[in-house]
Length: 227
Ligand SMILES: *Cc1c(COP(=O)(O)O)cnc(C)c1O
Image (cartoon, rainbow, N blue to C red):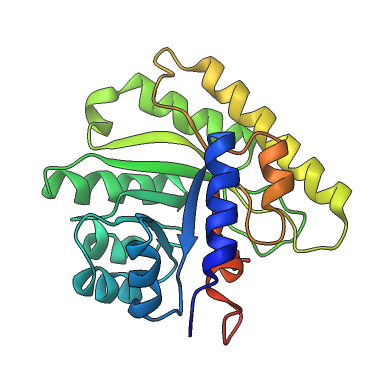
């Protein structure tokens, strides 16, 4: 239980220079580790589990920007709606509707990313290209109904593989879809986030146009169990 300070500073500076946001993925890690990174000035943290996020948020400084990066179940949106900064893994229009509803109850507007299925693996959730277009069109056609969410971009995870060409191609594909989706929007000034890249592939992701990377194990060390 200790953070990799030198690695953090190196990655932080490297990403700063590239204009890329670093989200430190702290799932399964103790609040002391998050506080240590906070004390170095870091504010963006990512969590995958609702209960864990709620617990940690209650014990840590209020100015942390909490990113929810896991698979979010509709019935749990209400627990994070009061404070979450950005929901990355929106994988259905139904979930987006629920976020909109809970956000309205909290008199907020919650920023979201649509999760796109780019990996060849079967198990990952998400939209495909036509579903992204449909969702954006639905929102465009009835802005009043979607007043409490803002889709700020796309998120994706590459296949878990040693095949670097495949990973690169998946990122290229997501970037293409991001640019294309942005071009269809009349107001594209808030559709600016492309969340792709993790510890093992973030350099490739940045080369392929990522604007935000989600890095856990490089900063906090390997997790005890794979999640
Ligand atoms: C766990 C997780 C990460 C961070 O993974 P590392 O390989 O530890 O950097 C990033 N994104 C998502 C969606 C995750 O679930």
